[in-house]
Amino acid sequence: MKPLAFILSLIFVAATAFAAEAKPNFLIIFADDLGYGDVSTYHASDCHTPNIDKLAADGMLFPNMRANCTVCSPSRAALLTGRYPDRVGVPGVIRTNPDDSWGYLAPGIPTIGNELKQAGYHTAVIGKWHLGLESPNTPNERGFDLFHGFLGDMMDSYTTHLRQGHNYMRHNAEEIDPKGHATDIFAGWAKDYFRERSKEKKPFFLYLAFNAPHFPIEPPEEWVAKVKARSPELSEKRALNVALVEHLDDRIGQVLAVLKELGLEQNTVVAFSSDNGGSLPHSQNNDPWRDGKTSHYDGGLRVPFIVRWPGHIKAGSRSDYTGLNFDLFPTFLELAGLKPSPKIDAVSLVPILNGGTLDAAQRDLYFVRREGGPAYGGKNYEAIIRGEWKLMQNTPYSPLELYNLKNDPQEQTNLIGKAPQVFKELSTALRMHVQIGGATPWQKPEEQ
Image 1 (cartoon, one colour):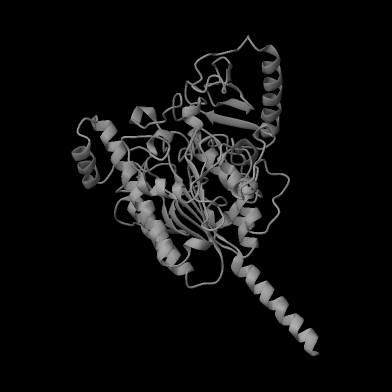
Image 2 (cartoon, rainbow, N blue to C red):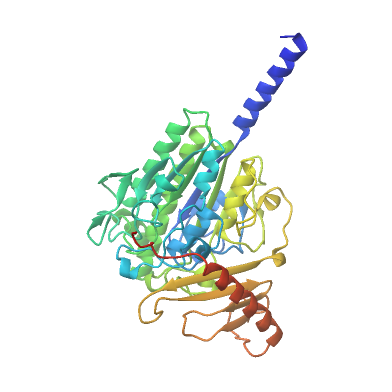
């Protein structure tokens, strides 16, 4: 080889190696039913979350982000596909009992695991899956190299880990029976995962989905004692929830500490959020927003949302952009050097993370939930936000409501009938979303 050609080849190899090394790692920490008001970085709270607060202080805080749904499965389906949940077959909660299951993750839709795996990433899910209990919708079959967690919807106890007598704890396809509190177990597995990945050059994506603070509200006893000693005025229900959240926050701190100890912190993009708002019957707090989990009022949709990447995202920064959890999908793909598919519904936040802006007025935010029982009848109910306006209903049988979120952020004054042109525009847009979603089956196909 001629000297110049040899030198150029070395430069090319070096540049290629640098590009591979420069690919960031990705970590999503996803809480379950964590209320906006139970994260103390947003405002003063009887619930102390110093580790989540520090994540915000070291990165960018988003006060106006929403979950993609008011309940678990649809929100998670959207997060992992970048598409509205009814467009991937998950408008409602996937459950053990097929007669009460309202979603089936559509075959062939790529997940973020599929996309990043093709880009050379090791992909993993630790914690709650809730997008399928059997083939072909287990994590290993939907783009993830490693699954160490819980397949189902909720645990009947954080210490027995069973759901209606079923053990859904898995290490990949193997049924396992770990001991201890689920929050401790998932945090421990995440720390072990980082230790393994630190030995490899390959970038990684970890989706760390805790069950906490979803009911049953079962914090470890020492955490309850700590909260009661500090705040004896709290009701029993409130003290239990605060303890469960503070225990979760502590374990998140441990996970992030190991990331730092291993030298992985600087090149890892960490995102933190929740699948929906907190459950009011379980004394969870969504202040200052109205209502809670299952509701299309903002207490059911507004969630904590933080992104940190040292040296790339300005520490202590804040964005008032109005978006959705699934915007992490194209954001991560773009940061990994990939071009997101035009078929997705999510919007990349990269311009914001780089210190720029996005025009939230250019997009509609669409929400859907399907549910059974007498209150819902197996039907959908929807909401849409366009700019400062929100059109919504909270059961399939309730009338539509219209709110101006700029003038009435607590959604107290229903303007239905008082803004006919806005209603016409939003109801037309909502019908189009419903029609598009109806093209995707949401039940398991019959055996041929």
